[in-house]
Length: 139
Image (cartoon, rainbow, N blue to C red; front, side, top):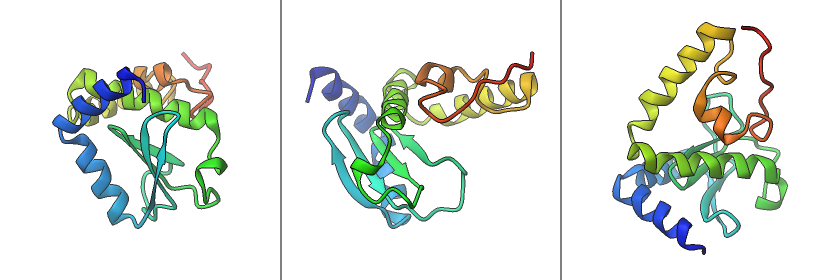
């Protein structure tokens, strides 16, 4: 695992966000699989009703809701790159502050163009296309 993954893992573990992600993955009855490409623990087949996203990230933990993906090989690489980008964002806000900051950015984007991602810097920097989003052309 590259050094940058170790640093990210250390910070995300110390802030407690990784433990939170593991709890979400376990409680949602997902199957844990290690992704060595990105240094992420991925819970596949999670059964949670919300949010509608195919996957979400909590530190170095990715919770995958899309039931058609039964193995790590089934998950598009672009989506994993997008989720890995989110995992790199958590250390910069020291874990749990990510949630209110992310949702404030969702609100800002929604006010600007009626979607939650086009002007959300967390999503834009993670790659809209990789995450399965299309940028709104509305001002």
